[in-house]
Length: 221
Image: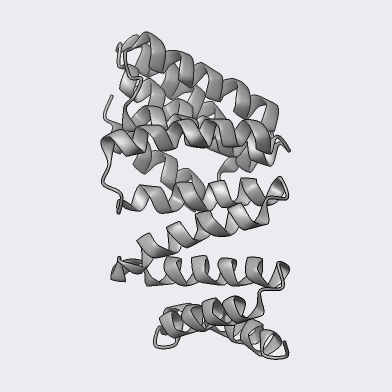
């Protein structure tokens, strides 16, 4: 199975809004990858299926498939790999969207352990993980802890100039969280950082306008 061809065809289905064809396509690809005895391909497709079910709010099915993917990791000696961490991350996100943030954090923390073994501390993968962990902490009402994870994500993104837009969004999310905690000086600092990152980027004009509006609101406090 040529995994690049798989992703191209999947992307084409989404680009052309053929959503009704996505699930049958993914299920067919799982069968094909199993017939070819290609566990890495099976795992990749299972992870895409988890994400698809989550996007369709079919959370029970997303969680079921995430467990199937984890079982595959164990059977095929993929445990401890980045692919295993990705599976944990996808399953954790499904748990969070299903209203189970405690279980989500359990899986996020397992993914973080693998990252620590396999990646450098500044790797971009951490930023995505910490953004997700922050959201789960917010769901649990642990806003100070949520802010700490966003701080870690922002520090990583700030070191990647090509990810300025994503960094700005992270700073804006952190500003919103600080505002929720009524830590206004920190909220103002973070939204100013978000605006500074986007002010010379025409492609992000809509987000820049949104962040400037937030900055105007925060200035009242």
